[in-house]
Length: 541
Image (tube, rainbow, N blue to C red; front, top):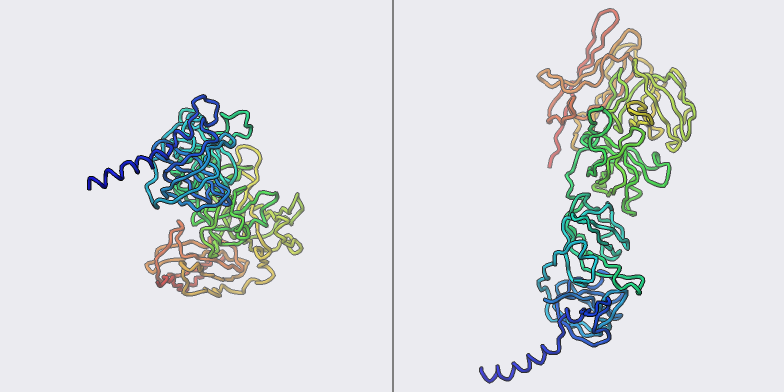
């Protein structure tokens, strides 16, 4: 054994003598921004911290690090090197746009899946200097004004000391489209350099993240809020409490982009189980643009809470499809004698009323007025919706489904609410299709049973004389407790009401048998009632 050791030690020492520590390769003692060994052939060994195809898919463009430092390795010949590979590299010390590199390199694999070096923690001020170029580094407690990152773009990041550094997002890293957290985060990156003006070798320092996991947090770490929480007004009753905040929601399309977009930035309406909201100018995957017109498709959205002419919007963010299954949002029935208000903003609702002002042209659309009992409702028909106004004459009774919008450019922004139908099918002439019945009838409750979990709702169709009748429709449980009021003290006529299996507070009710009760109060003081059972079914697994 001693003889063997005596023979091997000189060989091992000779092999080590041929290796150059990476710190010596990048050394710049004269501080001219260029490596002192420029032009010399060297052999180094280390672990791959940025693998092939991260920064360039055509050539070998990797970063290797040993215990003394890190350096870029470049070759026009593509040589596969994976993250964590232990390699030796033979090549020439070179300098490109301020960056030290070992060029014309030949990469030889020693071992795979070696531990990566721990990132060196530096400040943004240190990132903007020559020190530690080529190393795996980490900056903590940084922020950026960017929300959605794009490829081949430089972004400024700032740390708690107020110093800034440049973060470069390479289009080939797969980071493009990542939604940043609007709060402080930590970033792991390669410390690189690209001095476009080679007469200034101490410029162009960059932090080069490699993967989305190099960010300690992203927007997906934001708490998922309900739209009602985002819409919640402050003490003035109209301004959202979260105005200016960046939030994350998940909701389904109710107002498609082709109806509500008037410029280059897409505009859609979405709604979850709590409320609706307008979405404006958010980025989206190009392959999902068609789904902005698909009613019922669910999107996840991150954006800033803003206001435009009184309308609360989620703007300047990002959105992506979270469920391609189309589940239509069931419109709420606007109670009789009720006006549109702030609490309904961007909700999908249905109302039955009488036209008291026929449509008149105003800008890119038509305005008209509908009477809901004693309440007058403004309707806005956008030209893009393609709704015919020919039959919308005064005195006609119509059922309208639409989104509650707002256009009020004067403080305190508590008026200008309007109902915006989306399609021709959103307006149904009840006066012509269903004349008043000579007596109170409850025509249909269907489907019965119905399953809320499958997106079904019960349609309740009733009719009564218009003269001397006031109608109230209520859902009760079998113990006689009120569950949901669908109509209150409304005039006689035809109604197509919907029950979605929730109570008056929009809470889902358990499966079971319920009673639909129709009460007609007559002018002669008598009361007529009709009850019909409806079964709310559970979904079987």
